[in-house]
Length: 109
Image 1 (cartoon, helix red, strand yellow):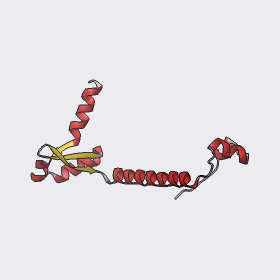
Image 2 (cartoon, helix red, strand yellow):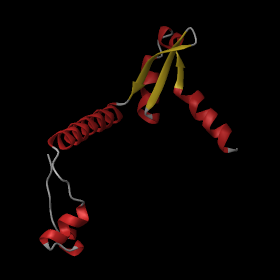
Image 3 (cartoon, helix red, strand yellow):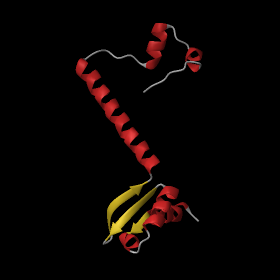
Image 4 (cartoon, helix red, strand yellow):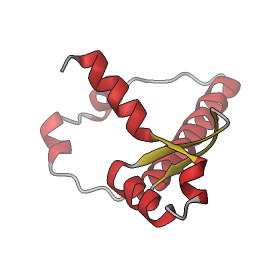
């Protein structure tokens, strides 16, 4: 099967008509979401809902939060007008070698 057919198949597997919910297949659909990660619910041939498993949802929320923090930090740096240094410049300035960082244990919350 070529790549295009595989892509179409994945897309079709991700679609679930709302009529399946009306037929009492919710548990089966939720099992499919847990197995595949995502389902798009269609009503009258239009997407009305996207179902994702909780782990995938947590990953998506974490990514959005990380992006928001990155964006805020970037805006603050631009607004401050302060000079920024690259990672390599910081290591050079403080005499840090790559091997010094390999064994460093860092906990970020």
